[in-house]
Every structure is written in structure tokens, then in C-alpha cells.
Image (cartoon, rainbow over the protein chains, first blue to last red):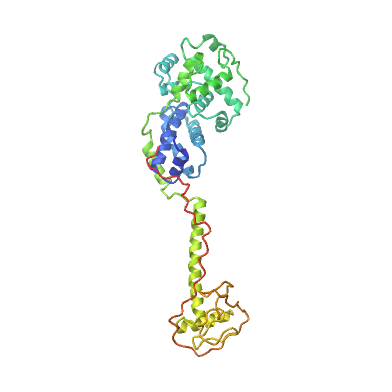
Length: 190
Length: 221
């Protein structure tokens, strides 16, 4: 984003255009992250709740663009945790829809052929939850290991391991001659 | 919680290779060929969103307008300090000008009758000798006239030269008793001009440096 400090400062003073710039830069990251965690049907609602929470603290926020992304993701994660807890307490009211379940080969083919973002996210969402979250934070939110560790409450080493496991599993899910079957079968991640 | 490391040194899927892959994805650099499909998947997941409005944007903007009302950009501390100093300097200069002019006028007995009498009483109480409007003053340094001799009436507490004569005025004598009333002329000397006040002190930092604040460009992206 060009002139992030200026855009942030203007947004903190109520400039709607500046806020729109921030929103359009950050909202896709939030939606993708929340889609992987909670499914598409919940992502927009959780993102909206995230922004409501963020607006309360936006004026006092200090940091760069990556810091803002991490801060928003932290809020989004808290909203997701709240949703999961509420769903656990009231299982009869579950409205969350799991990510669209498709045959792995279909998903992987769609990713390779179309390179579509939503299809790639659907594939990532099929990973175990911890791996899916960390891969998303590292790849989609472009946060480093330390930031992801802080957000998820894990050690940096644990974040690395989970990320690598997730990536290897993703490679396993993608068919194609350029992914060596022998490599995939040697991974012991299950 | 500790998780054992994976035996990931096979076929380019080592931990180092995966970290390099993540860096490649972030930078858009082509990875090693054996990681091409995984790279494509991750690039797709992180591809830029469509330009333009994003889902929920209007609602978020409405919430923003309510939560963060428009307000002026705050001045930086340096700018605030500069402006404050400038205002203080101007106010001080104006005060000195008015006070100095008034005292000088009183010292020369050129104030209107009642004002001259008041000045005589007030300034006399603090030891500053000024002529009365009832015929002038004859303090210890006075000559009994209505202050027509510049430099002879100690009207200014400052040791600086007073008036256009450049002569030093008499220092203040705090123990000076109240001056007796003397016959006064009911008309101040129309030709007496108040001693010019001290020149305004130099403004500490009359800076007009541009503000470091960024200029608002409402449609900047």
C-alpha cells in the first residue's frame, strides 16, 4: 500500500476515503483467513464483527501495514473462538457450515487448472485445523513466524513445524507429475 | 507444546526448502521445479483480490463514520510550540507597548488629568515617581515641573534608556514616599509624546516551517 502511514493517519482522523483504502487492503485477508477457519458462510459475519472491534481501537493503533494485518487477524481469531465456543454450548443452534467438501482430486485439479484463490483456500481448509490456520497466516496474511506464534499462542518452533506439515500435506493433495509420489508417501504426518 | 520435527529432507521438501518456498511465494519468484505445483497453489491462495469494493464495505464504512468521527488533523508538537511561542511573543510585545507607552506618558505628565492623577498615585505607591496632574511633581529627582524634561522623571523601572533622548532614567526607589500633591495643569501637554516602549523582544522561534503533517488527499490510494 502506498503511503501506509499517511493513509492510516487520515483514517484515524475520520477520513472515509482513507478507511476505504485500508478496508480494501485488509478485508480480503480477513475473509480468506476466516473462510479457512469457519467456512465461507461465517466468514463475512465474523469479518464484520472484526471490523466493529477494530474500529474501537483504530484511533490508538500504532504500527506498520504488517502490524495492522496481524492486529486485525488477532481480532478475527478472537471472534472465531467466540463463535466456536458459542456453538459448542449450543450445538442445536449450529449454523456453521464446514468448508465445501469435495473430492480431493477435484479440488486439486481446480487449483492447478484455474489457480483460483477460493479453490486454493478450499484445499487449505481441508488440512487439520492448526495447520490450515498457520499456513493461511503465513501465506495469505504474509505474517512471519514470530507474528503467527504470537497470534496463535504457540512457540515459533511449533509454528514452523505445523506450517511445514501443512505444506507437505498440500503437496500430497495436489496431483501431478511434478510432485514425486515417493516424497509424499515418506511424510509421516498423520 | 513440542512437536517433533518431520523428516523433511527428502526431495526438496526440507524445512529450509519450504521456508524458501514461502519466501518465493511472497516475492513472486519462481521456486525449484519440483515445488511448482505447491507454489502455484499458494500463489493462488494469496493472489490479490479483485479491485474495488469488498464484501461488507458499505456497512463497515457506516460503522467507521459513527465510531471515528471526522476531526482535524492534530498539530505536531513542534508546530504547536512554534505557534504558542509566536502568540506569546506578540502578546508580550503588545503588553510592553501599551504599558510602556502609558508609563512614559505618565512620566511626562501627558496623560489626561484624572488619568495622570491616578498614575501618580498608583505608580507612586510602588516607588515610581511621576508628576501629578495638579502642577507636576517634585520628587527627589524631579524639578517641580510637569515632566517636560525627558530623562528627569523616573518613570521607567528599567535601567534602559528611555525615550528618544537615550538618557538613562533614574532607577526606581522603592522607598520613595508618596509624593505630595502639587498644583496641576488640567490639560496635559499636547506635544508630549510617550516614550516609545521597548522594542518587541525577538520572537523566540518565528518559524514558518511547513508542517510535517501529510497533506490530505481524500482520494489517494
